[in-house]
Image 1 (cartoon, helix red, strand yellow):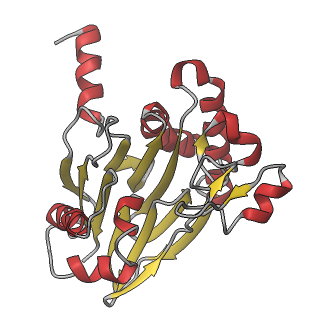
Image 2 (tube, helix red, strand yellow; image 1 turned 120 degrees about the vertical axis):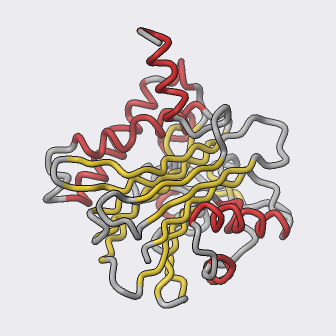
Image 3 (cartoon, helix red, strand yellow; image 1 turned 135 degrees about the horizontal axis):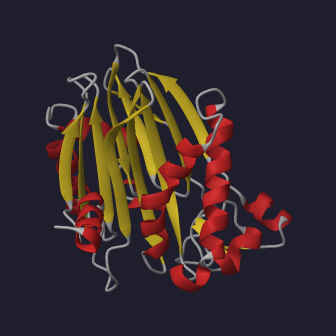
Length: 283
């Protein structure tokens, strides 16, 4: 296999998206007890699967990085696909990533959003939420997010949310200060300008003047009581609490099986959305 065919093959192997495997697992080479697994299920909507996932370990300089992310697209999957292939690369290109990590991540999120807006002709007018987690040498975890996908950690069986759900009702004042409005119609969720049900996202060019792509960031140290991390799209969190999610998989040792089980639990509770889930076992 040579030339273009080889490149295409590598792209297919790398991509976890609508046309690729919807489940998988791996482990750290530095710390063999750290494992990860992901699972994805298309929802009941008529459109194609709009979620993309990154779940891998990568050696960078003298560090091993666990790179985990869920990108939940809307109005098409092209923006989520773009994020899957470019966001982590942009983060790691920041020269001060190792010294000013939070500042570097915020700058990379902004730069990536600018790239998406510049490519609106090819990527379309849709957008995507994002939750990213970078595990550094198995010792420090850096979580960033825009939108309503969520990161949760289990410590001694107790769930702790590491991300912020960017709901329009919570950011009404910020949206209005940018000239937008938040609708709150009976029987519907609050929406930015009557359209989007999240207050922060990548893309969405028509709403961007009223919509932020600045991430909230949380940094924690991995300690002896830190058992596992869950990243999941809102299809889980619409029907399960953080503690429900932790309780449902705390006795499942295999990370991939845990991710699959969590999605099955959400489906049993009538979740109809696309659902993506990553579980990182730390013990």
